Length: 178
Image (cartoon, rainbow, N blue to C red; front, side):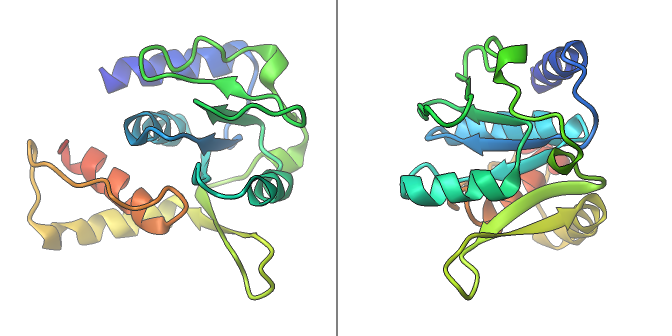
């Protein structure tokens, strides 16, 4: 089922002429939906940028401005400032249309960046920390120590704004757990 969603996602991006490495912000209240979006963004060679839904709106705005994404996916965010691609678990990509593309500028694309996590930084201003695909592959290689296998269940408890959520998603998808 995830493979089909990934194909639908990639087809939509191809139809919209979105290049590899597009920065994609995800702001959702639904962790299952976040996991689907993470998988599709990662498997399509784009950059996942999670933002916790419970952050203050000023912080969300600051992160979006700093990230300069191509697309914003959300199941609740309404904004006069940004075009938001509305998503749902039932049909996540139905609203992925040309009008929702924020930018096609080169700064909205990254090379070999799996995800960008935003920290508060020492100044309190959000700062993006890019994590490469090779770093994710090294982390996946370390998963062997957890003795998790196909069919096992992995708790998804970390906030989307923490690296641990990416660890939980990556572990689950790589092993074939739920």
